[in-house]
Every structure is written in C-alpha cells, then in structure tokens.
Length: 309
Image (cartoon, rainbow, N blue to C red; front, top):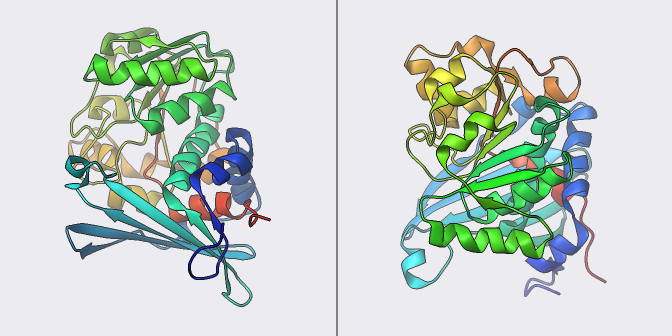
C-alpha cells in the first residue's frame, strides 16, 4: 500500500505477516547484545492535544531513526473508536530520509510482548510450565503467544475482572492452538510465571502468594500513580527494569514501592545487563520484570520491516 504522502505504508496485517513473535524477540535481543544502551533513549513526551493527548516516541538505533506518534483519546471507546491510535515513521540515519510508514498500534502490540519475553526467558525457571495472566486484551493474548515460544506451557489461566470479557480472549487463543482456562487471583500461588497486562491502579493479587523462583512481569501502565504489583513483592524480589531513569519516571510499581520503603532504588537491575549475562535470575526469591515500553523497542522491530512490493 502507498500512503497519500507517497511513502510506502504497512498495515497491521502486513506488519504481522513480516514479524512473528520469534523474529520480534530476536530483534530486541540483538539491539541490546550489539551494545545499545536504553539510557540513551529519549524520554517519552506527552503533549495535550484536542480531546486527549499525543505521545511522541523518537529513537535512533544503528542505521535507522524512527518516531511513533500515538494519540490517546479517553472518550473514543464510547464512540466505537480505539482509545489509542498510532503511526510509525521509519527513516535512515544517514540522511533522515523517510522510508516507511507503519501501523503504530500493531507495532506496539508486537514489540511489547517481545520485550517482556526477552526478560522472562531469562528470569523464569527453564522448567516453567504454569502461567497466570491478569488481563484479557490484545496485550494479554499476544504475551501468551510470545511466552509459548520460550517455554513449554501446560497450564495457562487468564484472570479478568469480567468473565464475559475474558472468554473471547480464551477463544482467540484456542483459535491459535493454545489452550487456556479461566483463572482466579489465588492461582498465582502455584504459578511459575505471572503476567500483568491490565489498566489497574492498585495491585491485582496478594504478593505473599508468589513463590520463590517464580517470575512476575508487569507491563500494564507507564504512569507514576498506577501499579499492578504490591510493594511487599517488589521488596523481596530481584527487580529488572528496561532503564533505571525511565523506571523512576514512569513505573508506578517501582515508584510507589520505593515511596513505601519496600524497594531500594539502587537495587534495580537493567534489562541490558540481564540480556548480556551480567546478572541472572535468583532461584531463592521472586524475579520481577517491570516494563513501561520505550522508543528503542519500536525502532528495533520496525528496522526489521521491509516496504511492500
């Protein structure tokens, strides 16, 4: 497809046709293994606009430069429109010439599970089989798919606030050949991996139930006043974040746990160190990954795309 600007455009379907979960995970890993430092990524910018706000996410990585522009309009769902919509512009680093327009929403749905899977692959026990997921939206579904590529999962449970909304997610996974059942918050007690993909403002489960050696990943928000994980869990866990300064700015799970005195900010570990083998999972305590999403992740995946013929 050609956009009105004359630039080639990749639709959501075309993005998914080119980038599968394994490919996306490999692109995220490669960026870190080749030495990219997430601390060098520009901060996400929020600008008031119209009936909501715009998120501007630029980045530079190797031979590519790109920027995602996402619109956030809280009233859209009542009008049958997505709350968040996005476009991605990919350029070459040498001349900053625009090369490709990409459906930014599809890119986000792909790169976020890929990043989480990179962390979980290193923080979860090799023999992990039991997964509990909080959430039933696209991110929850795509995270389950991504996790099935790194572990042989035999027990997958989805926990949602509304069973009627969770059932379609379970059905969607079934269409992909993945068996999942309806779960309850207490199921985390036996879980090897717990994923939180919700818009919750307060913790979604009892942190004392998480067993030592389990892996917990949270990616539901990038707001300082929202969290999915309880502070006591953060305090007794190995905590990995994408970037220290980004976590201090955007990760409510981290910020509030520290404010309560549960978490020492200096104990936070970075995703790059985990990927490069400088740190490793701790089987004697829970292992937590808190992700907020960063611009470099969009670019790492977008750089693997090619224009349509």
